Length: 450
Length: 162
Ligand SMILES: Cc1cc2nc3c(=O)[nH]c(=O)nc-3n(C[C@H](O)[C@H](O)[C@H](O)COP(=O)(O)O)c2cc1C
Ligand code: SF4
Ligand code: FES
Image (cartoon, rainbow over all chains, first blue to last red; front, side, top):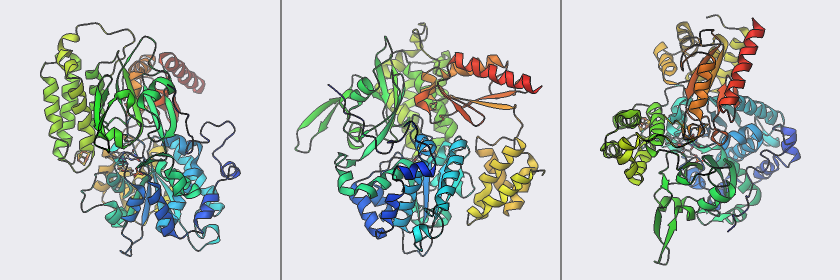
């Protein structure tokens, strides 16, 4: 068995010696040639290309990018805005950071192509507050691009103009949710809006039609415009096209970021071959495959899936391809591409308590089930860890989680319930045994998680 | 409000980035916090007047976003990532090392006024866990030994200043 090679498209120049984040270096490497090509194409043709490419959003939901653009209300007479989601806050996800810091012009070129295609005259990059250098790098890159007429008024000698501004967040995870982000950009608390009616494509920023796309998604738009939708659609798998950046963290030999064709590498190949397997003397126990909100997978479980021809196939965790559709069929998600690995030294109760503390801290508090439920899940799981575990706590946790998902304004409700639901469903034995197991000394090298 | 001339200049530059002035609330608060070190009560009034808002509109923003603070902190701000990937790699021990080095507790200003140590949520650098953000700079793979080194560096810089 040997894992396929990485296919670096978006991360082609990341960590390349001598590659710098200024305009001159980008142009030396062929930068902005695709934008020059784009402005010779009718905007509708670009939208069509993106639709045909099959590109799905890389921010977490995997929504069709071309479809999203088609839903934009173009008849309202109001301006259309583009917001680049550079909030990168889903635990386990660390890809946009490298694009922003090391290759900002790639993103700006993708933004400008998107703006041209959608007749956007003003774009905002919403960058998380904890990337202060990233914000400065983007601002400098925008100024350079503007001076060279790649952004600003009359780009490349056309009568089309578009300004890009950087807007910094201030440490709240919920600003990654697109309607919370819009509220935040309007200068308010980032309370997500209820959908319907507030679909960004119709009633977004300042109640105008708005496109929200992830940083990585827009870099793919640039590449699609460069090579064409046919060439792009050949990369990866049907309905799961292109490459994607996988971010591996936690207990593996070689954590880091790796770019592969979507679905061409399995979770097992990724973790054992690319990432070098477990730490010495350990074995893998669990993996969260798509950012902390994705449902956990337990090593040893298997999934029976239906094939198109009616037959079935059985996959182990190691067999699951890193794509959108098979991950969903296995009850979890490809999400943001953040793969968090836990080995046999980890207590699943403690790992869940760590995540529950995150969600309790980050709930915006608008919806009662989410505000109260996330806090209860945190309280119960941390009480378990702090020597007051009861045998029925797993069930209690599950019942709280079950009362959140589906009853809230935004998908944070699901995001905060899925870890609890899946940890308890798959490691129920460990939750039941925890009260007694707490008496046993921790294994060597085990870490505090709460 | 006593703001530096360059802060005032940057404030006037950023407001026209938005078709509605209220959008400049977060940028203004960032600029003021960089200048003053925190958001004093009069800054809330000042921003509200500047943007044509009610003070409550600004106050609710200041109190929601974790990065805005209403009290001064230590000279250096040490933010240790608390979330799972970092914790799995020893982030809690890293945090405890900083606390011990500066004889302080998370969320408090150290007795010498040099540092405020805090736990924060995922800093989007989980592949090089555990990570620590000291002021604007990210430090990667900060195990206990590295945390000690960084602490000593901060102490040496403090001694040189005195
Ligand atoms: C709680 C929550 C947090 C999110 N955080 C992020 C984020 O940090 N970055 C991001 O790009 N998308 C995030 N999303 C997804 C966005 O709402 C949105 O779907 C995405 O930015 C769309 O871009 P894409 O279609 O290019 O993926 C989050 C969603 C939810 C519900
Ligand atoms: S689900 Fe949670 S985060 Fe989303 S709007 Fe409701 S309270 Fe806020
Ligand atoms: S968990 Fe610490 S940087 Fe992501």
